[in-house]
Image (cartoon, rainbow, N blue to C red; front, side, top):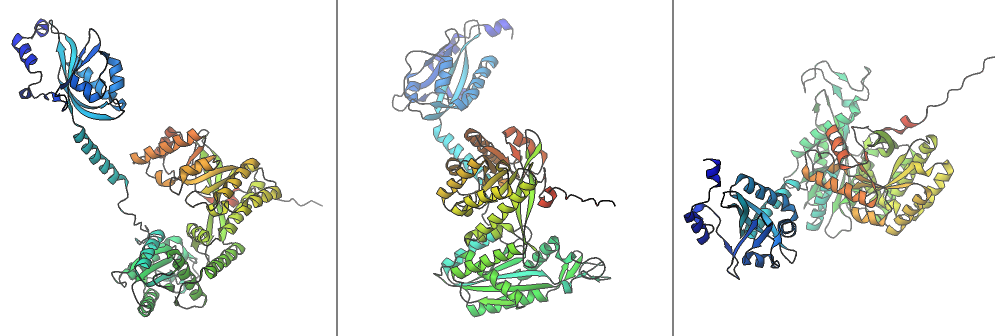
Length: 611
């Protein structure tokens, strides 16, 4: 076909047929949609010469406000097409025009009342006598029901991808329920009836640990791990403790009833929930578990050993005041008593009274503080603008009575529940002041619990310590852990206002994972927000986390707050956080926690005078 033929007028028969039935079904064209109230066809035409759009009466009724006369095309697109569909509508029109072909698309049109509806639109070019394109004709069909159903399917699919398959979180080392989820199951058992809770401390027996160099489980030339060949202390490594606990869990799984539940409730502790059992049976079962662990030879990849185990067993009954965390604390205290008396099992027939429980735990905290079982490590925080370390966060580390590592999260959580965390926080604050006084070039971030921030004693203590050690307040940033509910908001606001008046800054930790993130941004004069690492670790591969982190950064920018991203472990994540506008990053990529002594100035060496 020549160019002249392409521009030639269409045959009259074709024009007449289209005039009689604009969109015949047998041509594969969507038939005119007729509005049910007016029975009018729904269409529009655009004429290039006048740059105007003409509407059918049916479309005017669907839009809810019949336009006065013809509308200029750009105005129509901006006013009646949903803003998110502008690009799609323009692309369809352009393709119809330039390709001289029929194009289908689905867009949303806006009604006069601000609502919108979905339409399938078929666009066709109109031509003049010379065959050139003179405009576009569109035929519409309301498909709101279909599109609503499609969007709901998409929404449910996205929700399924972003929601955890289960809230039952398991400990990665043992495969057992973690402490928080195990406590949830204990609470459920309390509501259903009585039973017992067993907590067992499991650790290597140094006197019975041997190292093998032959086949696993069949040691060849063996030597004592605590012997005189330089391997002393090897039994106590964290890796070996974790491996021992993993294998102990497998032993217990072979002994418990199907209805019993196992959980890892501490670095060296395994708990068993014995729901619905009598006290006599619970004691018998607990004795069996402890004896089995003590008698079992544990074969590790490079050694075999025996385990030492102590257990605390607490009975619970329906309607008791003690909750899951109270029972765990009582059982843990019981195994400690058993260890001191060298007694494998310590039964507790009734939960400890609240005041006694609180007093016992406060004594433990005081003993730990007095015997240097608390220590601090410092992790660097890098400013992305300068790529330099701008500050250090001070993190708590805890040792148990035997010198083994203890979970600081568990210790602080229990201390908060029993109102014993203030002394720990004050200890951390004073150690931070000492370090700041020694290194006036360091900026330090100090974690405080929500309960301590709401304690009226804290403000005066901070002021006293700043004066005592002569610290520049601008070196200090106090972090409020947002996962803990602030006990007294009025006192917390007083503390925040006062430390900022002194020159300190205020940060909100674990933002996005706690009780009232956005509310705290309005209630407290926050200078810095730390985005919870849960949203950072898989940021590059998780589009939903990307949307959330970008939004959190934008919110903080609007409020005049700096942002820190935690748990940054690789370069792609770092690059993405730069693009999002994050101010600081923290994580293993930029620096691991190190003892604070590494930050202290080296001691001066005195030179003796020569005589």
